[in-house]
Image (tube, rainbow, N blue to C red):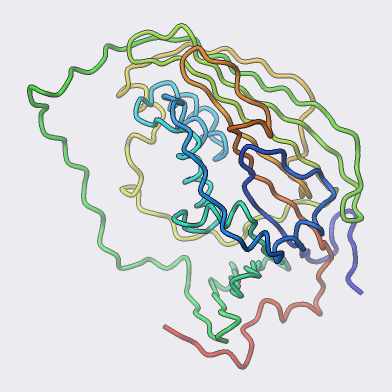
Length: 355
């Protein structure tokens, strides 16, 4: 029988993970993992779901969302203060989150609203991720410089060294844009604004999820830009997460991929250049309260809700309200791995290598 770990596992860890998007509705409460997994194969889940309407009008706070979830709060603030191009914070963030989930966004949002089920396995510095619906698996062995991709249905595999230098040609250098013609409107004058940042963390009552003890936290982050002049724009953006953490440590990604050449990153991604190019230079105030969630622990349930408004509109909508965009992660079937499970990280003998 698999061992159910309550604290740090002795050797390795395995769990199933269900990720989906909930739009304009209340996500399921903690404790519904098994029911939600079973619902994936129901007739209702297999039916087509219409794509959500776009949520326009978030002004220059679109870049904020990407910075928040990428862990770069300072860059997010600077980018949000001067980004006058992004008109849809939710759509832009969906693109970024798609990369994090490892799926192409085109036609995949419908799939994410239904759910994406993966199995994650970790042992002795090795990592395996199974896409249970697609019948594929990716194995990373950092110490051996191996990235193995398995097609479980076709019984084929590929293997590469993720740290090897590729022979791809260097990307073209950015050329200066041509001078504006007479029809191009003059850029707006540099502006100022007042940005207020608030982070309020509220502890939730302990719960037992999937047989494991967990502690919960409600973490609300809000940004509001007011008194804008010139190139600055008034607006607000909020991110609210609700997570229940186990006592287990969160396994870390162990095999970093080859570093991408510096030219692949647009210069405008640097916070200082955002401010310099946009001309908007806001002043910031920050307030925080509450305990610090155990971010290093494995969360068995987590929601991340985003919402915003342009101009002097209302504060960001709470999770589950019309127009909200919620990323839901549920984990279950947690158990320890031992030396007897190392075959999970090997290429089956009856698989054939493909280019």
